[in-house]
Image 1 (cartoon, rainbow over the protein chains, first blue to last red):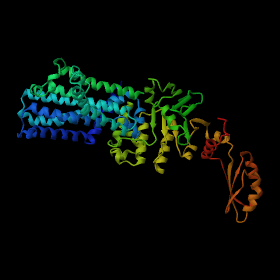
Image 2 (image 1 turned 120 degrees about the vertical axis):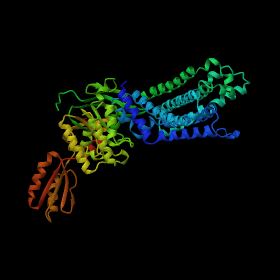
Image 3 (image 1 turned 120 degrees about the horizontal axis):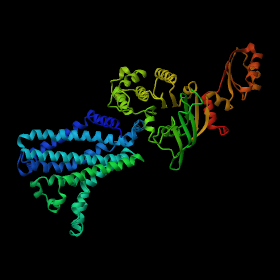
Length: 271
Length: 313
């Protein structure tokens, strides 16, 4: 693998997202939403203003779990199929570069764009909130940002895998939306449905393990278990065994969720 | 160009199947180092598929392709790619980049120093627009930028797919000037074009693809000689001489002599050319001018691609 070529592809992808203001737009969305949640999240309970970092993170987790997968899938679904459909893929592949390098280069460029927009968006809010945050609050908030980035990278990996497999952009976008729908909306409902329907006879013991099959759930658990206040308030925490609740283990699961679809994409793209 | 040199590009029994469709069927070709080789055929004849296989973009279903002796499906081909330039048909570039940035991007991919970009831009006449975004380029400018990209790294072999698409007359002339320079440098050029007149005067040899097979291969002159097409004789006559001239040449014409005012046209077999000229000398007083034209590449192409009689290839 030649790093120079790979980085050239990554740099072009990143620059493209900077120039078309994608990074700026996503950062602004994150900033505005995070500020609104931080200061007005408790309005329904009759309180306005910053309450606590735990409360803010809990609200942001609910937001990010919907938003981040969607943004990542929309960012990556045409990474390969878009080049193919526009007719630029042949020219790229005629260069002294392997398909694997092209794929990873594209992924890294898009991943950097997403990481920068997330850090800029949520980081700006952290700066604004910094007078109200102690060291532990900062630590938790940074952990939340890191896990949000991981969540985005997972769904970006899935998106690139879809892109390498799809015949055209229309199908790739459809598959990306279906993927979002499945992991963010359907998966948990099906699990809970099975659990309730069988009166807890099926799935009760293996439920925590089944949650690891959904990166959105892994992200939720990762954030819930790092905050004591949230752990108590989330019913999910009571069914999740302590041995699975290690941030390192959950982080590793997220990394596996990044590597898996990328490996699949590489295999599919080589064929 | 030496015919005893190993071929720059060699294809052996190359076949490509898409489902039940055989897009390329048992193609054998040797393209010599330093020659300008034309590849012509109707849409769907298999030119683009053959091009893509020669560049290693899609695998062959059967057979073998070598560029400079290296198999295109092997890992060693990566190094050869650095010496190959490719201009695809309808080149698509990145609108958000400027012309110079586009070339720098491709230069990095090819491992070519960034300083080569300015020379390439200069060569295709795009230096004044180098810092403008590609989104503002005309189709011809994009094509020239694509050509500049293909020239990066001083390639030894150039694959040009419809390279003059979208170019105006001046740009086409400029393109051929660059091509002439490249040929003097010994660059092997493989080129397709729908404008056969453009190839006719420039290619050393060409291959005509019909339904995925090479129907004919050789120099334009050798194809003319193999295809038994008549020469075209056009005679300008003086005021009332048309009937006399027509009567004199009709026995030697392959079909009825066509009279349009003071101009007569007739087809004539190559071996009857001198007899036809003798006949015209016999009515010299009525003849103002004579033009004898070889069959064009277009005539040869249609003769070969439509006729089933040309089994010699």
